[in-house]
Length: 317
Image (tube, rainbow, N blue to C red; front, top):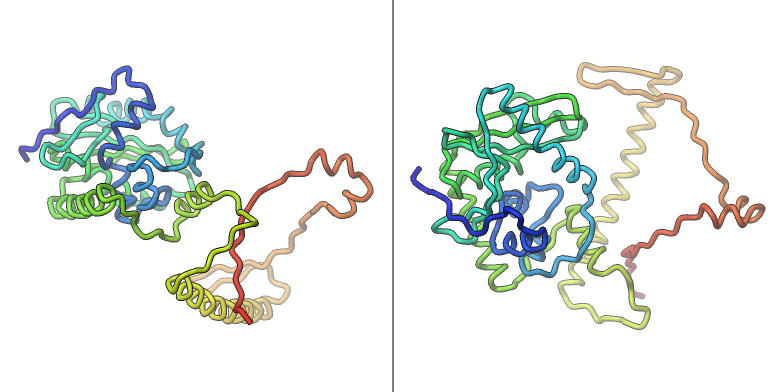
């Protein structure tokens, strides 16, 4: 392949804040999937805010999973060596593409004696289907191809501990067509958005939802805005969608009722393609109004206050 990565900064004894500063000098492997719209934890607008240094200081939605991913990295790497016989080593540096300076890489491991690397992951049991057969989740596939673009590696291995008790490892071959695609979209993102400080269009992902909540947590009762024609179009679209969703909700209820009528007293039914259940179950709830009236001290002691800013709209009269 010929491409050999430059060392932007050694990470040996590098403080976390300093590491973040250098990391934001370009786009890393996890950013690649986000820019392509395949990362469920990060959206393009979140990447943009991070790179210009204006991302709010919030805990990630998957903080616990991220913590255990870091803790288990060494274990996953050691098990990879035990199962494959391939020795690995750390590369304690932020690597940089020699031609595209905005392409960076913080790799987990490099394979000793081979032009290959290793990415270590942990995954929830609920995501096990994403790893069936030869499948690799899209965001991770792009992450590994990004690393190959930066380092010039011929292949990249990915090892994952699923649900804490199932170990999977796979080899991803270098894909020049996919690498060219990554270079293209990353170059466009960096030059057209980060350099020009022009934010990309916000999307409907959970990551974008969390970003908006963190940026604008409280409303100002004294502030009103006259919205532009773009906002008018968005509201018209939302209004139309609301009517369509109401119709779909009614249709959904109709189909469900027809199935319930068919099941009658039966708890379970099946077709060639589906299994359906209609089980009896109990749910206990606390009568909060009565508790507040009869035991106000207990109510206050266990009352949990949550903040939100629901978006509501109606047609002006």
